[in-house]
Image (cartoon, rainbow, N blue to C red):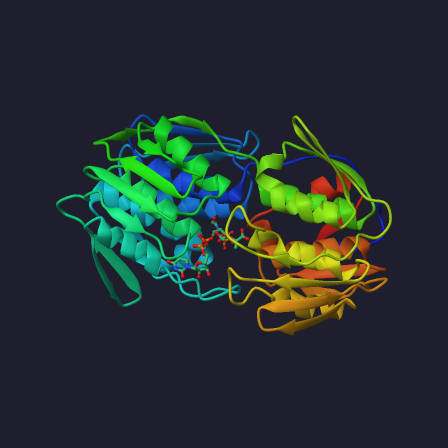
Length: 421
Ligand SMILES: CC(=O)N[C@H]1[C@@H](OP(=O)(O)OP(=O)(O)OC[C@H]2O[C@@H](n3ccc(=O)[nH]c3=O)[C@H](O)[C@@H]2O)O[C@H](CO)[C@@H](O)[C@@H]1O
Ligand SMILES: C=C(OP(=O)(O)O)C(=O)O
């Protein structure tokens, strides 16, 4: 097992280039399954474990997927699909594997996917995905740990209202509806930039989707889609994580490729904390003198404050001046990092869905673990400012979502390395 070892206390300075977005590329790779003629070529694909996992998932369906990590390019030839089944081992590893259900239903009229199960941040049901498929005419059967969906006569467009703007359900329904017969109207969909990116890719493949990024999406089903070339958007959560790193280390970092439009709530909260933010054409400069000031945050669906930045802000609040409240409304169990931060000396109390974080003057390095992806990022941030050495275990969680994390932080002046235990 590998670990990250960080010696804290180094100011971050310089430029860091943000990679393609994990949460955009995963649904887009699922969508490559819809390309019946011509392969797809995706650019700015980040070198992440999750990208390898979803590539394995689609390869298990008989599709040809070749990932060139050096070039950040993934080529997918989905002209032939030989299986419609995603086994437990792959779905368990990464919940986003469930995103192949929509494309498989649309393309093959059937799909058999292992039930994803719970995970560290919550139970994460898939009822909204399934309701959407049923509304499009699919028959769903659940048994022996699998979901079987079928639509032998093909899917039919429908009016669908989502009880909650679920990101994954919106993506799965858009992909299924893009090849359904007639029009689908999706009300109260998720509005995340990653939804817009998926819709843009599908439209380049020949789909007719309008309204992605708003609260109403209209999809005119088409008979066939083809593979296409597409460049994935930069990762707003990776960008936000480096912005917080700059703030916590009293640094001066230029976050190249960051799109400020996608980071409005993060920028607003950092400014409120006294951090200097300069939005430029191809990135964002973040500077901070002295300790950040405590702020309150409440996670919400986009354009609200992203739950995927909650843990990182908690790490910042742990060393900020004053007391901040962190309210998590999206996932019911996303405070696993609190106990780990407390091991480093943070003063945090949990009261239901809210954590009260009283800033301390210093954190102390110790052994901690990454309990999930963003909790792992929070540990890295805490380690960057802690007194002495921090060792982080279970870093496979971090490898799911941060492209070349160690190299990028070392280039900014951090003392961080990976070691084999
Ligand atoms: C690969 C990817 O893009 N992952 C992101 C995606 O996850 P994901 O797509 O899983 O998140 P959702 O937006 O679906 O989930 C949000 C909330 O809705 C609930 N829910 C969801 C589906 C459903 O059928 N029923 C239901 O009740 C979930 O339990 C959760 O409480 O959006 C989350 C919310 O921004 C992010 O944290 C994840 O990083
Ligand atoms: C929760 C996350 O991802 P996933 O939905 O893939 O678990 C995340 O990116 O923080």
